[in-house]
Length: 214
Image (cartoon, rainbow, N blue to C red; front, top):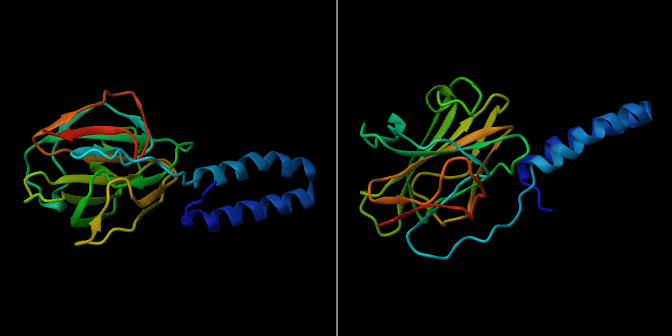
C-alpha cells in the first residue's frame, strides 16, 4: 500500500508512541495499536484508473457527495458573483484524503484563506472555514469554462496541503494535495455542464465522473 509523503512523520510518531506503550504495558500497547493502524490507513494513497474520455469533470476527493446547491465561488478567485452549481464532497477520517485534479488544464489562480474549523459536513464550512481555493482553466479554453476547486479544513483538520502553483499545467486525475484529518472539497462548475451524479453517493477521487461539458 502506497503512503502519501505527508504521512511519514505522523506514522513514525504514532508507531514510536505505540512501541513505548508496549514496552511499558502489553495491554496499553494493544489498546493503542488500532490508532496506529488507523494513522497508516489515513495516509494511504492508492492508484486510480482515470476515465480517458474528453470533456469529463472528475471527482477530486473520496467521500460522500453532499446536497448540490447554487453558490458563488470564493471571491479571492475573481470568478464573478453569479451563483454556480456547487458539488461538495465530505471526507470523514476513514476516507482516502489525497486530492486529484478534476480536469486537465492550467492553474489560473490559487489563494489561501485562514478561517474557522466547523464540521466540514455543515454548509457554513464552505464560507467560514480555512480553505485553499484553486481556479482551473480546461485545456484549449478561453476562460469561459473555468471551474473552482476548494480544499476546506474540517473540525479536526488542521493542515491543507496543495502542491499546485499559479500557471502550472495539470492533468486530470493527477494528485495535487491532501487535507488532514477529516475535511471537504467543493467544486464550482461553469455554465454549460451536465451533472452526472446525485447527492448521497460515495465518490472515488480520480474515478467518479461528476459532470461533463456539453
